[in-house]
Length: 125
Image 1 (cartoon, rainbow, N blue to C red):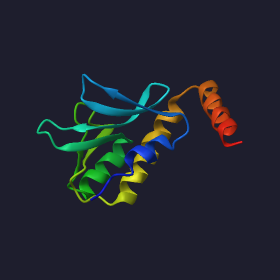
Image 2 (image 1 turned 120 degrees about the vertical axis):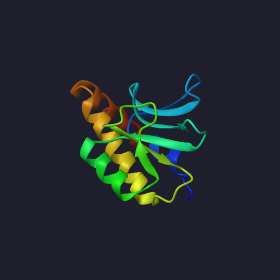
Image 3 (image 1 turned 30 degrees about the vertical axis):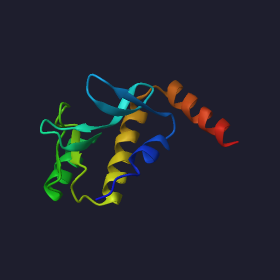
């Protein structure tokens, strides 16, 4: 499966930022420093993307797709990793990214959420 859309899709989210974590050898997508996606490798060097979810969503996804596994180096109840060499449909990964972003965004204070919304409104004007 071709997942070339990941960077553009993640950065299209309001307030999303990208940085490279040298100590992890991974690219992190975050909102105000709170990560919602991590692109790197598992312990065997396979390319992965890790995303946040509810425990129930994680269980359901891992049962349905063999290329979605508990999150590498992350809380395995709240994060899953998807093998980028696998065959999970693009729409499923996009939905996973949407959920992950929303969980992180909604965990921010109302003040920060409003700041992000206002920044986005100004850029769109």
